[in-house]
Length: 304
Image (cartoon, rainbow, N blue to C red; front, side, top):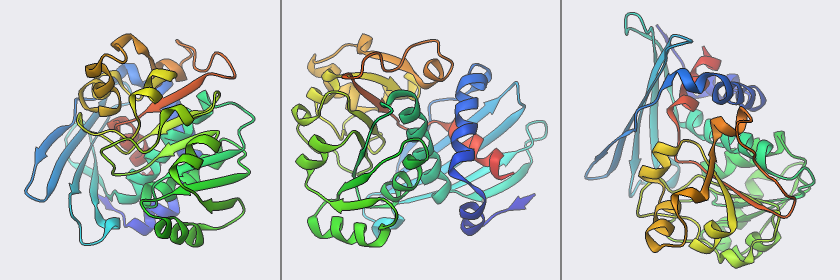
C-alpha cells in the first residue's frame, strides 16, 4: 500500500493530463461504472460525505471520504477529504491520498472539460465568483482549454477580491470586480462559492456566455437565479446526482420556471457526442456539477 502527501498530489497531478483522462472516462468508461448517490450524514459541525465508485470494465474501485465544515476556524479548511484506491478483487487498499487538492483540481478539470465542449472558441474574459481553493484551482485549470486575455474575480467583499488577485497575479491580467460586472462582462463564468442564494441577476448575462456552477450541492442552496437557468442550455455531470442534490436546478423546477426536459445532456452524452453541446454562437450554455465519484477515481488512477 502506498501513501501520498498533499505535496505529492500537487506535484504529480498535472491539469492537462487530468482533463484528458476525465474526457476519456466520461466518454468511454461511464457505461461500465457504478456510481451510487453519495451518502450524506449531518454532523454537529457540518456534513459527512461518502463517495464510492466501481468500474467493472477497468476493474477499478475507490472511495472518497469528505467532511464539509459549517464554521471552520479558517475558510481554507472548510473541506477535508481522503481518497482510498482499492484492489477490487481483495478490497485491500492500494493507495491512500489526502484529497483536498485532488478534490479542488478534479472539480476544476471537470469544469475545464465542460468548457472545452461547450464554450465558444473566441472567449476572452474569465469571470470567477469566489476567492478560495476552488477559485484558485479554476483560475489555474481553465486557461488550459481556452485562451483568456483577462480574469475578473468577485469574492464576498472587495477586500477579499483584491487580496485574491494580488496573491495569484501572473501572465493573465486579473482584476477584482463587483458581481454585476463579472456577470455582464465575462465570456466564461465559474461560480466557486459557499453561497446559498443567487450571486447575480441572470438578466445581466450576455448571449454566448458559458457558465460552470460548482459551489452548491444541496437541494436548498443555489448560486444562480431562475432567470439564469431558464435562459441556459443545461448540461449536468450526472442526471441522478443533480436531480437529487442541485438546488440550482431543483429550486427553479419547484417554482415552475423550468421542467426536467430543460436539462439537455449529461457529461457522458456530451463527451461521447451522443448529444450536442452548443448549437449557436449566441446560446448561453451552463454546466452544473455537484461532484461525481468517477472524477475522483480517475484522479487517483492518474496518481497511481
